[in-house]
Every structure is written in structure tokens, then in C-alpha cells.
Length: 158
Image (cartoon, rainbow, N blue to C red):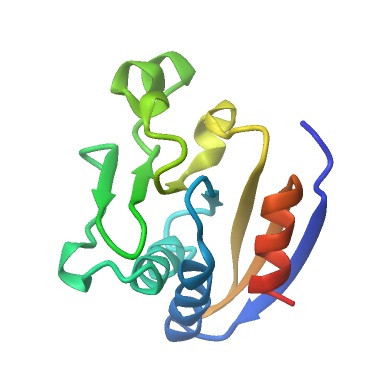
């Protein structure tokens, strides 16, 4: 694994604050961006994802958990591909889903449970790990791998 180009840590005191962090990230996403999310069940990934989708101007009614579909495409300001790897055992199984054939440049990719199949991440990407600290509070640790992800992270969490 390579060394991050840039890291940031931010604390979220509530699900609404986590949603707002996602909203800001979604406003900044560009085609080709890849964001991997890591965190235990209940860590706040869904709140962040819903915020990202809203920030990318995806209608709220379209945002669902893709746990059973693996990948769910959304139409917004840019195409947003939301994947959930929770039920994926390894890279070979992921390959069989067609995930690796997602259009690389026409939209952004948002992947929950990236730690289940870390090799699914491209060489350059943004990784966000969510840690519950107490009750509704979360710490988000973001790592950028590459120049574009570093610029995205610097704009998201200056």
C-alpha cells in the first residue's frame, strides 16, 4: 500500500453533521473521482453517503442502500456510482459482479466497505474511515492517494 499524499481528521458530533460533511464532498466530486468508505456497522457511512448524493444533486428519493445490488447508479450533477462491498468475499467475486467495468471517467464512484476488497481501489483515490467516538459522535479520518484526491481532500476539509 502506498503512503497517502494528504490526510485530514475531522470530528462530527451528530448524524446531521456527518450528512453535511457528505453534502460538501458531493458538491466537490468530479468525474473520475473514487471515494472509498471504511467503518463498522453503525459508523455513519450511510449518513455520509446520503449527504454525498445530495451534494451531487441526486434526488433524495433515489438514494438507497445497494447492499443487494452491489452497485447502484444515480443521476445527478454528474453520474454517481454507489457500491457496497459488504457481501463480497474477495476480488474474484467482485470481478464477477461487473464492478470493475464501471465507466471510469463519466462519473464518480463511492464505495462502502472498501476494506473488504481493498484491491478494488484505483491507484489514486480518497479513503475515508469513520470511527464512532461516543453516542452520535464520529471521527472521520481521510487519506488522499494521488494529486487529484489530495486536491479534493484539501477543498473538502481545508
